[in-house]
Length: 210
Image (tube, rainbow, N blue to C red; front, top):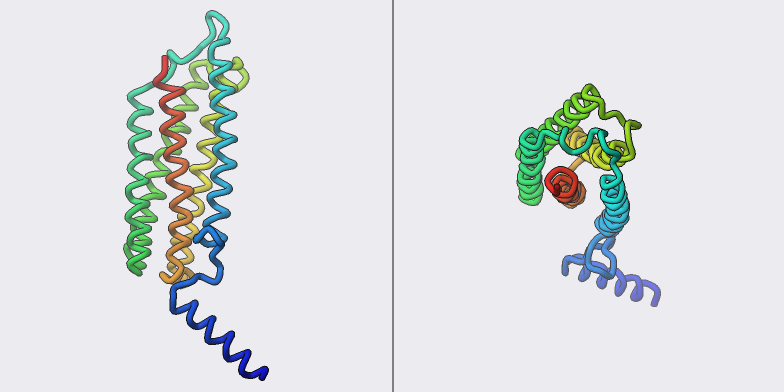
């Protein structure tokens, strides 16, 4: 009797596997890891929302004579933003290659994404250095504190994304990222697209809105 029950359970498991059911999937139809990433991104939306709101509140309280938005180099930041947005395209290509089981091109596009992200971070460091030399330090005014906190927080997120991308490349080279686990690349891609979308909002609110 017990053997019959065991066989029945095994048959049901096999049928479920054949039907494409992921044993780690939640009732939402997505895996636990992907759901966790969505929840993390949702919480991050709240954090960025709070930081952007804080910046909008304090940018209007800039004392007369203090350095403000006139110091921004819009053309330079526009180019830097374009580079970051292009990294979303290479990330899409990396995810597509991972789903095709193409390990070589997955590593290639992940490396391209990490490189473009690094160029953006390099531009942000250069920009901060120029601002500091012109007198806009972190504690210069409430405006500067809100600006550096918001953009620096985003820069930290991009840096974390670069670390994830490089980690995926290293794991792939060591054979520890089988293409059957393409979802891992997809989850990192979700994070990367998120930081890109957030930057579009920050760039528009902080740099473009008068």
